[in-house]
Length: 147
Length: 81
Image (tube, rainbow over all chains, first blue to last red; front, side, top):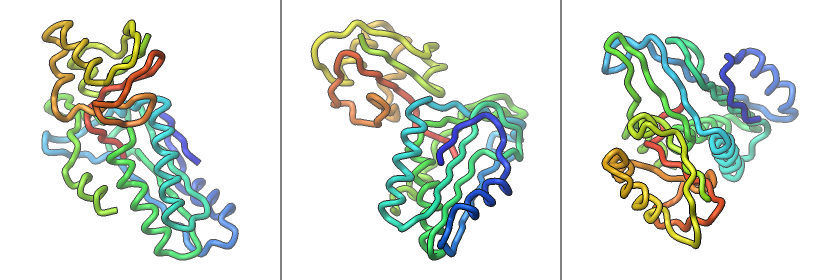
């Protein structure tokens, strides 16, 4: 399930949904990304997430399809929020089920690493020194290339 | 006609979210960029090294072919998640 939405999501509900549908799987791994309240420009009050409608959904679907080719997975859920979010709010959810934990751990990390490098979303942070666009991190590229 | 979209900081710097361009034949993304650069100095950020391009929702190289009816998007490196 791929969802891009401005609304918040309920981690517990998402976990329950994965658990109800994962049949014979023995592992569920979930990751939740939050809005940090700091950056090297100062204290972050809000971020605005822009996305490319149409391509963002397609990109997330392709990333999940690639994960399914690498690992035997049951359920895969990716939720990415857009619009204005306050510090400490939830941004992104990745949930993966598999027969064994290693596949679930690796697939969740793979999906996040690919999302951060390929999926068309852009963050603008508002700090006590004003707004600025977030630059892509070299460490995200390194994480992407390890796969 | 092709549709061109801009996102993120690039959209702000160009002060343009989208535009339609009369288009005939088969050229490349580079040709489209060149056509925009000829419109004036304000389009200069399009020629910067870190600009990415997608044709019909797929990230591609700047030598990719563009056909009439295509949707092209230019944007900075992505920063979601």
